[in-house]
Image (tube, rainbow, N blue to C red; front, side, top):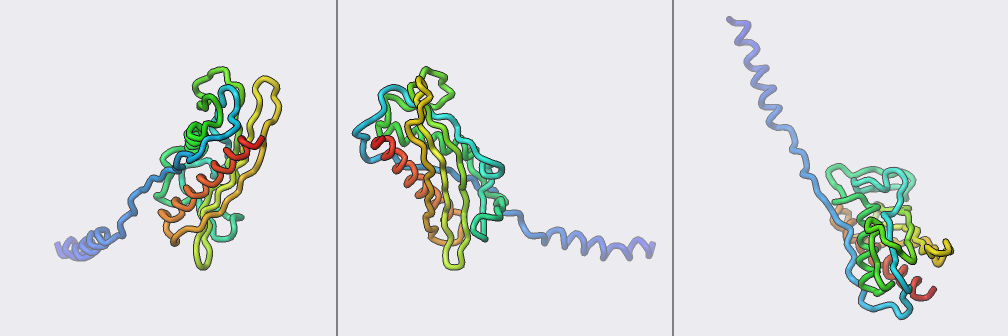
Length: 197
């Protein structure tokens, strides 16, 4: 009987220690969102412009947000912080919405509609990450975007768009706001390049 009572303090200690374990952070989900264009293109494409989901290598195309503290040679996935969708689809959807608002073509559609388009957009996400600095963080976005004539397979436009937007602080919220500002910048430049082709 004495032996059973001697284990009671140990069991009590284990139960108290289990209750004191730190709580797990709640999961957070973020969107990349661009605001509509403020001006229409002067020289839109004639016909339908189709956009497929963008490509991405490795972790860049996955849902966890990425973070780097050494200029991008080592990437880490954020725990408990995710994009609402795969970045490849989310950025394509914002591209379609933005180019529609800019009047980049007679119609701008996602490739899932499977209609006869005159032009198609192909692209790849090169970088999409929060980069930590000593004084402040930046949101880094780099997209390679191309416009191809579907009838001739001629390359109309192909460029790499790189942007680094300062974050207000070291938080994930500030990094996402910086990445959204970067997306806005890239889409505006891409639309201007379509207009100037």
